[in-house]
Structures are given as C-alpha cells and as structure tokens.
Amino acid sequence: MKLMVIGGGGREHAVIRKLKEDPAVTEIYALPGNGGIARDAVCVDIGAKDIPGMVAFAREQSIDFAVVTPDDPLVLGAVDALEAAGIPCFGPDKKAAMIEGSKVFSKRLMEKYGIPTAAYQVFTDPAAALDYVKEAPLPTVIKADGLALGKGVVIAQTRREAEDAVRSIMEDKKFGDSGNQIVIEEFLTGPEVSVLSFTDGNTVVPMVSSMDHKRARDNDQGLNTGGMGTIAPNPYYTPDIAARCMEEIFKPTIAAMRAEGRPFKGCLYFGLMLTPQGPKVIEYNSRFGDPETQVVLPLMESSLLEAMLACRNGTLDKTDVRFSGGCACCVVMASEGYPEAYEKGYEITMDSDVAAQVYIAGAKLEGDRLLTSGGRVLGVTMTAPTLKQAIGAAYEQVEKIHFQNAYYRHDIGSRAMRALEG
Image (cartoon, rainbow, N blue to C red; front, side, top):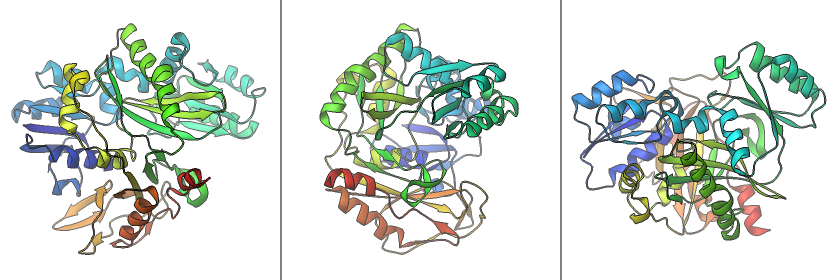
C-alpha cells in the first residue's frame, strides 16, 4: 500500500515509524515532513493546510490511504476533500473535528449529554467577559474558542491576569478569529491524564494512558510549551478509573457525536483531570497528541495500519488492538529559549550506539547534515518493563545526542514515580 501522512512533527515521525512496521506498506509520503522524517519517508513540499495540493498529489501518486494528523487540516476539511477525491482517510471529517475546533461546541456538547467537565460561561462581548472575571473565583481558566497552536488557554491566578487574558484574546486578537468567543471555566484540581483512543464512530478502543509535562523547566516551572516529555502508562489512571471513564466519558462522547450527526472516526484524544469528584474532561483533541504519541505507539504490539483502516471502515469491534504491559518515557530535547526566542541551524549528531527511538520534530536536512529548525527539536523514547527503567534508559540515550543550544528537562516521569512509590 502507498500511504500519505499529513504533517511534519515528532508525532508524524512516530506515526510513520509505526506504519512502516506493517508488511502491507510499500511507500510512505510525508506532506511536508521534515529533515528527520526524510530518513523514513519521502518528504513532499506541500503544506499541511494546502488541501488542494494534497488532493492533487494523492491522485497523481494513486495513494491507497491517507493519514491526516494535525488539527488545522482536520478542522479545515482535509478528510472531506480527500474522501471526495476517492482517497480513503484516517481522521475525522470537518463536522466531527469541531470537537477540537471549537471549545464552545465541545463544552455545550458535554453539558447537553451529561459528560463531566468544569462549570463554564461563554462570552462573545469583551465588556461582559471583563465584568464576569471581576467576580469569578480564582484561579480561573480562560480559553479562546478556536485553534490557537495549543496556546489559547490561560490559567489566571489574579484579577489582573484574567483581565489581561480577556483583552489579549478578544480585543487584541492574539489568536485571530479564534478569540471571537471565549470560554471562562472553573479551575479543576487533580492529576492530569491523556488518553488517546481509536474510534470508528460506534466502538471506542482506548490506547495506553500517558502523562505529559507541559512546563518548560524542571519541577513544572516556566512557561507552557507544546510538551517537554511524556511517560506511559500514567500511574494515576488505575483500572477502576479507566472503567469509570469508559462508562461516564468515552462511550457517552462517541454516542453524543453520533446523535449530533457528527460521527467521529479517527483518533479522539481525551484530556482528563482526576478531580476529588471524579474524572472530568479538560479538553478534546481530534487527533493524536504530541508528544503523547511518542510513548503510546512504541507500546503498541498490533498493527497501527489495521487499526486505522478499521476506524475508517467501521470494523473496529472486529480488530485486534493490543499494547504491551511495559512502560515508555520520552524526553524532548529543545532549543534553549523555547517557547520564546531561540536560535536554530545547529547540526544534530548522534553517537553510533544510540538505541532509542529518536523522533524528529524540528530539523531540516542540508546535504547529509541534520540541522535544528524548531523549538522542540526531537523526542528520545525508550521502553522497558518498568517506568523507572524506561526513564533511566531515556536519559542515558539523551546523553548520546548532541546539538549546540540543546535544552531538556531533567525530571520527566518524576511525578509518576512519586505516585508509584507513594
């Protein structure tokens, strides 16, 4: 089979590596891919939002199956356009991708169908929102309605921070039209859990749980990033909690989307908070999370391609989806200064005995040299029978990968270890 994967980050690299394991796969094209992905797939200079370009390429190359991974093309209708052109796809159509594309839509969906989430208010008028935050309990959470590169959420600790967030999103249009509406919701407390799941619109099959580390610095200090590392499985996500989430959140969400005439097929990401009152949804994503994918897929023992085809064809209930009982740790190596200003263009070198799965997120090829080209440069993943072993192995491998300006957190997985040991 000839496959096409849309996107160009570490998540796409992990997806491509996993798809390559399937004997049915003969070729993989990445649009646009990156310098590291170029060693595992044919990279094509077509942007992830260039839907006419990807459709034309898929037709020209007689692509058998396309995988649309990033949020923007999903919300823009890439799957609709490819399917209309006769190219079978993994990923939700435009109507279903709204579950991530609009926070207002997803909150109202949860409210309508009784899916546990934080209490909230929706505002379209900045003055009304500013009045509200003068009285709202602190901390309070302010979210832009639409996509904002994962940066459209502010946890305001003070009135001033809340007012600044409202003005920045709604008046200054920091995220463009994504800030035409905002959601202001209660601040939840408890351990966070990420659960990616396969679904064909009827059946839902959760993957192994994971824990992301969003803050730039050790001990969860510094600015929020796109993710500085992950571990799987998440020790807070016990079998009892998993069973409760299936009945109270996962199945009801799939049923709600079907009832709304928006059946969801693809990977649905559940961002959960395990509150004292029980698990609640913080957010939905309509695709694989990054960097969660980089610890979840290495633990998958069955065929990713078969699972993806089953999601598209409605046969997930008859498909073998298996994960190992082991653990995984991914440490993200970034450019010093990320997520703000950072320098790029430095050569990445690796010792000859690197044993990790190294997923490239921000790098380009110049000749045969791999150079940094982004804030998050790469993810270093190791699997092992125990979490302690996986963490230790990942950090051993990080020492064997070099580029000027490299920065990484030294405590990925430490919170999970405390949970296991406590």
